[in-house]
Length: 272
Image (cartoon, rainbow, N blue to C red; front, side, top):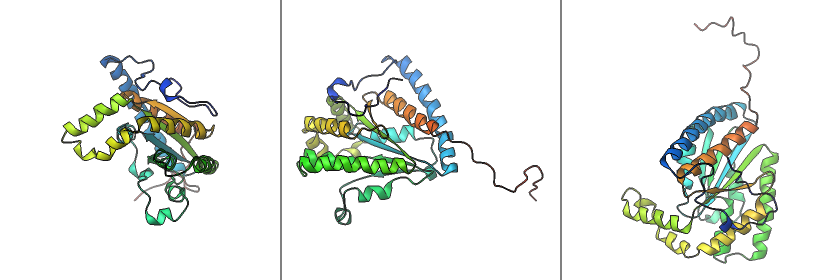
């Protein structure tokens, strides 16, 4: 597996990352099938590790998904997390702030949704919207953006020190691939519900968004909470990469099956 993690303090130029990259796998049906077999194995392993995470109840995992419209955030959740127990996993989407949320600091609503110990939390878009959309549309100044970068890093540091492992993924697709996916939403009656005319307006700001993503990830990728740039033109490779990193993060927690309750002799225990 190639390393898609952004090093802390590195200068980031997204155009140097190929959204059509498939690592060691060729863009053939045969290699696609090989990758999907590995992904299936990882997803099965994820199910086992999630149960240990839930049973131990002393660590948490937060997965942050960001990317342009149609980059595959929903598809990633549907496929990679297909084996997890919903009891131990929660997906949160941060939309336009409510009047109550606007009455607090921008991280107030986010902290409430952070996963509890034993849980996997998935942010389908996240607190990073407050330094992306707001910056691209000129709703906040560069000074405020820099302040928020520092506040986000401090917030994530607090979560990390409290036992939450944070994985941040930028789903990197090309502008041409987005065009095809938007057209598919128009053509396919089963997908038309996903189409939003506002997506076309945001598409016109593509370069502004790429600049905002570059600045954001370079400023907020830390040793504890690094960003990963995931080539997402090929959905099957996107799933493989993210499944790999999620399983790796859970394995690194070194979770063990909790011991049986004290004082019970299972050798002599009888159930009538």
